[in-house]
Length: 385
Image (cartoon, rainbow, N blue to C red; front, side, top):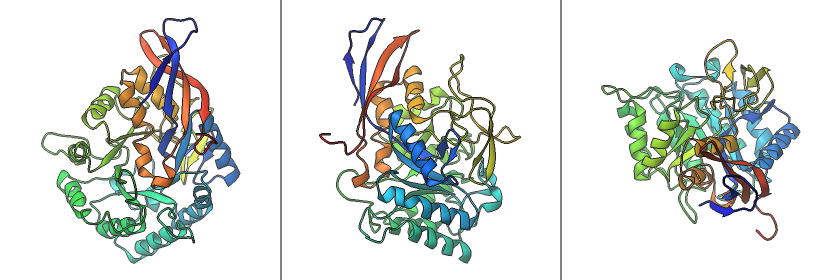
């Protein structure tokens, strides 16, 4: 829960906002750095920049790649998880619907039921597992997959057993197919290492709800209503990209009110986020930024796009920008702050959830309230905290 502390600086309303460090469970990169392909030293620098902004825990998201490249990326980044620099890895594919690829590499999407796919999944899980074993040994925390595909049950069971959360997304599922998948999960939660432990149990999250899935229609509801009902029951969590383009701000507020403890606001940022105009990559896909993706005068961000296409390629702001958006849109702090901190932390094994603290400059202008840059960032594990 945030604490607003009145300050003495002049202005219509000033003070400080103290929050847990922000936890981004879906981030592909930042300002020219693509986590899936960049050298480790560049990944480290991007993470340091995010920490300076108050984003102290980051799950590196890897998009659909050629199988060998995806495996190499897991092997390259898993040591950053084991040393505590990254909070985990999220694999966004490759078992996705070809009808809902979005900015993912369609030519590298795989059917989960094939022998090749099963061998790849086993290799990925093995690459993410530390030799020491134990409940905190798996670097991969989640995998996005389309639950309606043949072979999806094998993916779910393999992931749960390994301590990895299956995350429905990039899916063309009907409502019935989505509900069937949730029912299949019953009994799969407990065997995997790292899925229980002390505190709240880890729960799967739907990857960027509303995006890369069928929209709601009164005669063909699709997965969205079922996901929201499950989230309201506490059986599921949902991601939202709060950049003003992926989801309408009013819908963001409605979902936060419907399932306040189950919403994970994510950046879905990429190498083109907060980057100068130019060409970048999202794994194997060429993307572009027409200009820097800061907030323009109209208050709505310009998101990176797939090169030469109108398709949104990633989020337009980092997670600190998403928090500013939420508060500027009128989301109460008691809903906004957990959605960018303590709720997404539940994606992680208990030992990785601490995110430190951030003290933000707190001002009001033009009738809206949003924090300025962090005044103080206390990282997780800092002495005395």
